[in-house]
Amino acid sequence: MYSNSLIELDRAHLVHPVASYRSHERTGVRVLKSAKGATVTDASGHTMIDGFAGLWCVNAGYGHDSIVEAAARQMHELPYATGYFGLGSEPAIRFAAELAERAPGDLNHVYFTLGGSDAVDSTIRFIRYYYNAQGRPEKDQFISVEQGYHGSSTVGAGLTALPAFHAGFGIPLDWQHKIPSHYSYRNPAGSEPAAIIAASVAALRAKVEELGAERVAAFYVEPIQGSGGVLVPPPGWMRAMRDLCRELDILFVADEVITGFGRTGPLFACTDEDIVPDLMTTAKGLTSGYVPMGAVFLSDRVYDTIADGAGTSAVGHGYTYSAHPVSAAVGLEVLRLYENGLLENGIKAGKRLMAGLQGLGDHPLVGDVRGRGMLAAIELVVDKVRKTPLPAAAEPSRRIFDRAWDNGLVIRAFGNGVLGYAPPLCCTEDEIDAIVERTRMTLDETL
Ligand code: PLP
Image (cartoon, rainbow, N blue to C red):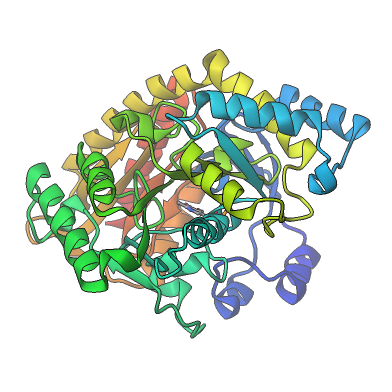
């Protein structure tokens, strides 16, 4: 049983991220106590398969001794080192070099953050600096994609297109612009890949014309839109958008905070389409969620322009915990695991997961099944032919989440009837099959 005092303490003191504070006070917290591999156990001893890897991050699975040992070793040897004053630590330097070696194209320069939001935030500052260094300060308008999520920092949240991240805040975002999502299942252009790509290209071109290309700084994409409901663009979409950005002299930024580190198969989803962005953001799987860290990758051109622009002056961007040595040591070990079987297992498990979820397509509630690798979603509808969405309220999603939990499965139940899957890449075949079976059981109970 949960300790009542823990629930009371949580209610009274812990402010939760992205939550209705009042609803949460009513419902009370569910306390997770321990985890191993792909399984998590709550404080009452109930075990579940974590079909969402925490928050799409624990790619290596829980309780990996070698990761814990890497952190402990580093904590004993050098728990902290600043990157200010020309100082550095060995794990941070090695991790940056290992990442640069594996990143697409000339993304050779790595700036470490604490997570994804500040990675996105950093790109905005770097991009402004880049254009100012070229004497083009008027290039200060940013474009992203509806249904996109790019974190909730004060500035970076502007790129996020989910209404909940703006409602009630009233922070002016007039330098922010959006084009419609490629959302294949509900795209007014139809479901044909060529038509969806053409519509997105036309929308970006029109938006840039409206603003004036000389004013547009950058265009941000997620290789797969995660928090918007796991929306997978058709093959060729990323390349078409990247090419258009090149043509229009706009920086192309790939936000790989979810898709990076094996989530879709390879280390970076950009390589699925052989794309080299101008900047790339990562976090989550970077350290498999064991410790906080994000990383911004800068191309040679962007880095050199900023460096030359600053000359002998400092580029005034940095945090106390930039390039934290413990996070870097963890990242190095996680990277070793990816390349010693984890990515390979994720690819195999991802095929099984997609096949299993496709098998749920016959269920009366399942309107769409989509995904790539170990990143997937099913979209529930009331009427399959009309694609009538489930009522857009938190309650049905909460009920589905609760039922899945009782059935031994943690999933993400988005408010619009979309169920999200991002299991640890270490999942066994049996665990993948259990994810699918428990989903079916949950859907049957929801009918
Ligand atoms: N960018 C994307 C694509 C994300 O999915 C997220 C988080 O889910 C972020 C940025 C923000 O990352 P964080 O929550 O680590 O700040």
